[in-house]
Length: 152
Image (spheres, rainbow, N blue to C red):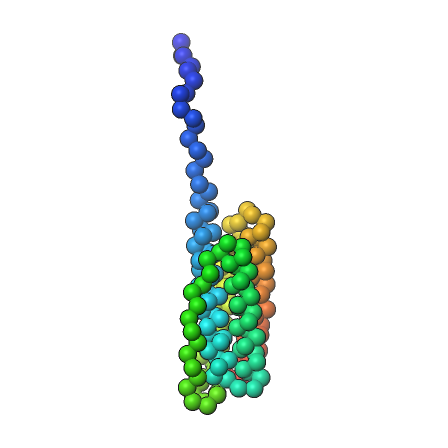
């Protein structure tokens, strides 16, 4: 005959959601991508002139706004670095195709990381943030594509 006894100990706590680590990694990755793109766009704006300068300045401002939204949601802010001063007159010696290619890769990485964050986040606030970041990256990717076709 089996004897049932009550456990003297409280049941073990539920283990952490394994997706938590993935979410934290994605938030850190997104913060790093945003910081990189913001520096890239700010540096490019300092070296460009005319409409290209305005376009890069607008992209840098969008990345700053996205980074603020990420920080407000509890994500780690990306490290900021000072924008190096422009060397020589604006627009000289810059291979815009390379700059815009790097921006294109960064925007695609941001969109992918944001979509993954949305998929692994049960919290509605993180899902809304992820959706906003992915939509912003897609919009900015289109802007970068247009700049690439025009300036490279």
